[in-house]
Length: 295
Image 1 (cartoon, one colour):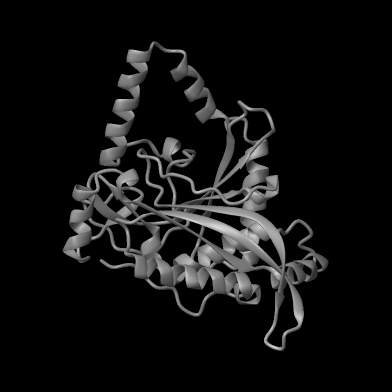
Image 2: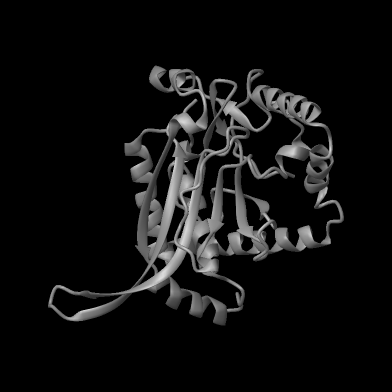
């Protein structure tokens, strides 16, 4: 059974989201003034100290979570951020603004060092009440299911069929898919496997020893946020007493659709995100409160 928010539905809602009707008229007009995600894309970079996470991870691995990594904590921190700042889980479709019914995180990473290998993606569904242990369990289960699923490459097979068709047919096929997506009629079997539909795309560039990348937001689909995590770097700094201290920082880059929320809201959301990264103990238990988006 899909894990969804308990939200009221109406006839004008999409299968993947609830239309927002009580938000500011400025935001209701924004899809008409900024017609594509590229027109509305804002981006920034930040960093968080992760020395606490590394010691915390060592203890959790000793407790039996031997494969838990920094990325699991990053994802858990973002899921918890959405529980406190749900407007980041909005998306624009058909010139209307919607609140997503689920938390679907698209995990992206390069598969090999081959130039034409492309990205490997997997979408994992979470609840706003999930702890870091729930996130760890669900990601592992999703990856295991993907390995065992013989139809897991269905999207790649569809893409392989499309690229072999004449260009004018391909253009027509893509136009039809964009039209269906615009109206929310694209099949669930496609949207649940699509790397362009979800609450956010999170990519781990640090695993390839790269800094974070400011990724663009695709015009097709419903992804409102791209979060790129870079490599961990060591820095020697002076404390208040003038003594040198070694610190470890993780850089990350965020690109978001400014039509879903203003900069003040996004800033407050990522203060939560940074807090959870620096205090992973807070992710071990469910949140005391889950905030619902506007009607």
